[in-house]
Amino acid sequence: MLRSPALPNMGLLGTYFAGDQLQGPVLTVRKDLLVGADAELPWPYSVRWEGKLAASRAGEYMISALADGFVQVYVDGQLLINHLPDQINELNAGSVDSVYAEGVIYLEQGWHDISILFAPDSREAGLRLLWHPPGSAPGPLPSGYLSPVLPDVHGDDLALPPPPDLLDPRLGDDQFALTQGVELRQAAIVIPPGPLPAFSPELVWQVANGCGRGDDQLDWPHGLAFDPQGGRLFVADTGNRRVLAFGPTGELEEVFADQAFEEPFDVEISREGLPLVLDALAQQISRIDPASGSITPLEVDTGFYRPRGIGVDEAGNILVADTGGGRVAMLSPTGDYLVGMGGPETEIGQGQPVDAMAVANTPWTVTAEDGRIWRLDISGTLVALPRSTTLDGPQLAGLPDGSFFVTDPVRQLVQYHSSAGQPLRQWAYAGLFDRPTGIAAKIGNDDMVQIAVTDSAACSVSLWRLPAVTLEPPLSE
Image 1: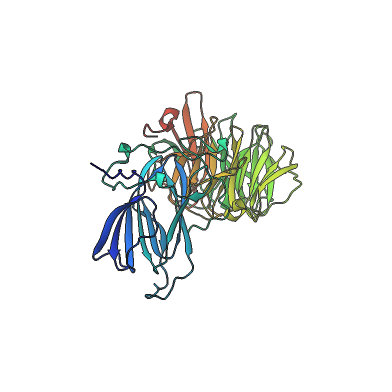
Image 2 (image 1 turned 90 degrees about the vertical axis):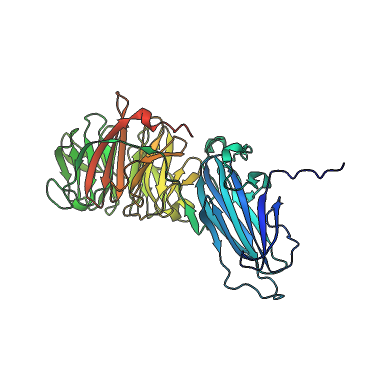
């Protein structure tokens, strides 16, 4: 007895309808190994493909469609591509040029529901699916990463295909990777990670006396930094043109003000243990000597334009997020210009870098206009946040193991990332902050992590703590 060979469990399940409205008489239901191939059906028709998409490693996925006609793509029930032609061609009117549309979404490792709706605008119209998986090269979306399994089947029952090859092993591994080569993207829809498993720190102290100029008030605060020696917390009280020093229990110990301060925006600690203050409006770096109270400008041999963030690496080199200049500038401890990363015409420049740090010898920046974090030494990136503004943009804070926190002013929370950049957890208390911007973090000998956060809208600063073990990746990771 002859038997037909079983179709491989790849591709998607297509339901084809008579007419272009994705409803009405069903012409056929079948497994399509190649989505968008010639349907060999009378036109006009429309089709809904359903199944699963394999994310063999966690990260940022770009899905795109080259289509002649109406097309929508949903991943995990979220609209990712939405191309609505101005008009659908009448019968025999001929096809128009294919339209390219793309969307970007963060996916955890595993299988994800995917649904594609397509109504071709002519008999000859077609659809081509492409993708750019994390850490790998863009190209056609292979059928092997699609499965014609409906959403009611759990993805754990399916074996994941092996992840595509990495362009650079430093981008990640088989579990997670950053992405390279995003310069030409034009995604209309971008879906950052979240919600993530929660972490729940304990409040140690808070200064929240409303916005104002009083001794016990702040006005539009931003960056902050821990004194590694004395345990004090330095805060850029931006609106009041000063830097405040708080003691370990939240008492105000000292105020540093200077006529040269115009918009002190961020604070970092130098290799010598002195606070460095970045002034966005004066466009300069000043060094504070807490012992004498003196404030001295640092002479640098490059210029900045509205810089918003500052960091220091283990060698004492200074990283400046030169926001208006569209770059991250690295200076020697004495202010000599060493190298610039990014530039006005680059993706980093277009995204507007608002903070920079070096943690575990790895340089990072975050860009406000596109919500991206960047590992600067390899140009690896990830959309981590919704887009925000440069005036109240996200900031970074690292821990000795290379992991780090990033504030999310738009969603009013804080994210925690692994040393590779993978988003792992988020602040548990929704709505606790109005607009969290500045952040600093450190870990003590007791393995307790301390996190300080400024809220630029509520004009507050708060200190939190939690056991380091509670930040470990969830078991599901």
